Length: 104
Image (cartoon, rainbow, N blue to C red):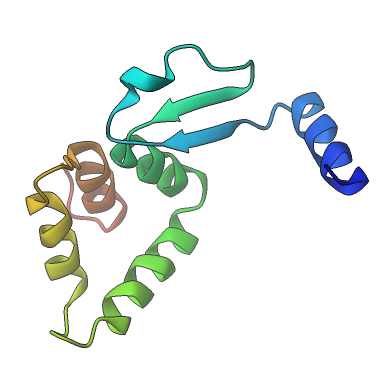
């Protein structure tokens, strides 16, 4: 590990930063080192939305705009995530709609 990585990790621990493993199956991550946690994609994206809603809105809108085959709106992109067989996105969907003014 490089010196700057060690410094960043020490600083992160000191300032309360956490490392996150994003997974749909958290059963394999029950015993993690201190400062590391497993989150579902729904929880992870919801936390990012809570941390910086304007940035997440820009990112999701940018992702939708980048979809070309077939083109997708933000609503279509979110609907595709919601339909995904392995993923369930109720928290993110609810928070997204609240941030956008649509309410729960």
